[in-house]
Image (cartoon, rainbow, N blue to C red; front, side, top):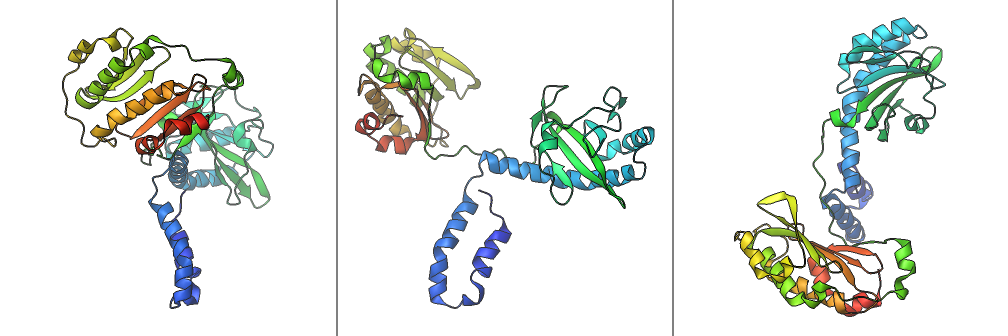
Length: 356
C-alpha cells in the first residue's frame, strides 16, 4: 500500500481540523494515525514497486512526448512531413524504440520511426485491437500503458500515448514504444512479504485426495539420518536454502559459496554422513533471519507433518535462512509460505485439522 506524505497531512491535520487541542478528538484519531504510520513503514510490495517505477517513467517521458506531439499537430495529415518531425524528434524521447502517429480511429498515418530511421510496412496499420488502445486515456491526455507483449519482438513492452490536439479539436495520438529491456529501473527491488500465504494447487489432485494413501518412501525409512545431515549442512556447512522432497527422497540445496547453482542430494547421499565432507565448514551467517538454534525444531516439525496422517501429509518443504521463511506443500497440492516462528508455533494437529 502506497501512502504519500500528502495523505498523512490530510489524515493528521485536515481530519483533525480545529480539534487539535481536544483530547477527545486526539484519542479518536490515534488509531487512524497508527494505521497510516504502519502502512507508511511497511516494506513495498511488488505492486507498490511497479507503481513507483511507472510514476518515475511517466515523469521522465511526459514532457518530451508532449512537445513532440505539438510539432506533429502542425503537419497533421502529411505522411512525409510527419515522418520528418518524428525523425528530428526521435533523440528527444529517452529509451524509445519506435515512434509513430495514429488517427482517432487508431490507424497509423505515419511510418514507424526508429533509431535507424524510417521502418516501412506499418503505414495504414490499424492498432485498434492492441491492448494499449483499449486502456482509458487520462483526462490530461497522456497514457503510459500497462506492459504487454509486442507482436514484432515478442518481448514485454510499454507504450506511451500522447493525445494530439489543435484548435479544431482532437487529431489523434503520438505513440512511443519502449522495450522493457531498455528502460532503467528507478525503484528499489521489492522485499518479499513475510505474511502467511496459502496457494491452492491442482484441482485434479485435490479432487482425489481421499482416494490416496501415503506410501513410505526411502527417505521416510531413513528420516533420522537424512534430517541430521541436512541440519549439519544448514547450520555448519554454508547451506542457506534447502528444498526437501520427502516423497521422492531427495533434497536440493544452495550454498553461500556458490549461490547461483543448486545441488541435488539423492537418497544415497542423504544416507551417507560423509557427504558433509564435500562442503567446507562455514560460520552461521549473522544476517540470517532464522536463528541457528531453531533449525533442528523446524526440521523436526517437518518430519512430524510427514507422518501425522496417511492422507493429508507433507510432500515437500523448504527453508531459507536469510528471508526467514519456510514453504510447505501437502498431499492435496496446497502450499503454504510462512515465517519460521509462525510455523514453529503451529502443531501437527493444526495442519491435519485444516487441510490446505
